[in-house]
Length: 372
Image 1: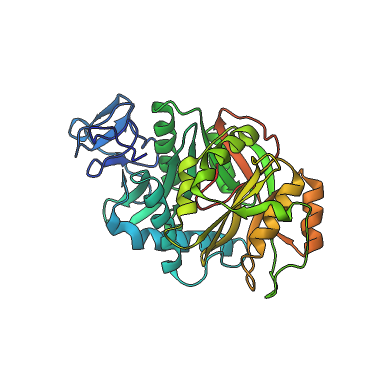
Image 2: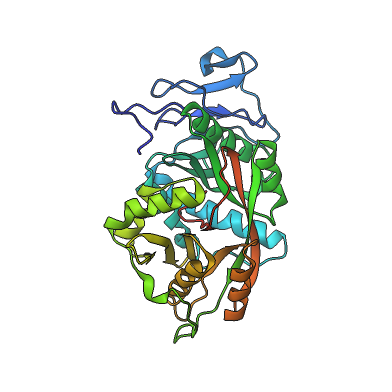
């Protein structure tokens, strides 16, 4: 989905290139419930949505005013710097090491993936005075819901309403296009982001512990009862993967499965666990990129199937230390990971604004592309 209709016009709530929107610290900078003409900037005041020319003045906040607009190809490097610096800065301020290493070039992968999977569904906050980016966010419409991807605000503008404006834009997109829910995977360590999402109606529905495991050069010497049932996924598995995820999680993501199976960036691996009837009991996507060596998303009917898929995923990365999110309530699976040598590094919540179906099986999210 390109966030445009068949005439090339933006779907309600999605910013078209060249049609910025002016916002301020009030956090009201979301898209109006109707598409604006190409190139028409809008500003929000107590009278509602009006062209900027009709508004006597633009409200200023303590620092600089900013405009929300779609990301352009020319923003790729600056967005990568914003992601790299803002995420590492937050963790450093809270006594933790860098999440990303290798320089901002490694985080260019976020732009590359999101623009390949869902062109046009991106938004940045541009400083009106300097032209520099103050914040950015990716979002991802799927069959039944919208997922909110990585959201970042430059450290100089923490606490000045930029994150609220970005979030309101995506909430408006979700509601105006009649999606049942907006979902994300949110760090349980970040009280600031938890409070932001909670104020806007998100509910923490499920909890995960982030685990990492140093894989020996010779692989992990463990076995599960389902090892022989795990194989590489192919395009012919997409429908069965969607059917399984709908059964377990109440959502589907066919475009994501197909994108990862095609693996144009040469960073993805996708495996499935097949049952005796030829159907699927589970599947796992893993990412081997320098910025995001992670297992997931994974969907499985039971813990034994999940363990087999995790083992297969880990052994794809000898000499590396992949991260994966394990449901806290799956005690046997958690204990098994400890026995293999895994240790905890963080915690996350499945946050949902809108419709929610409890998981009936194993659901392991990821951050690229975000699971929701």
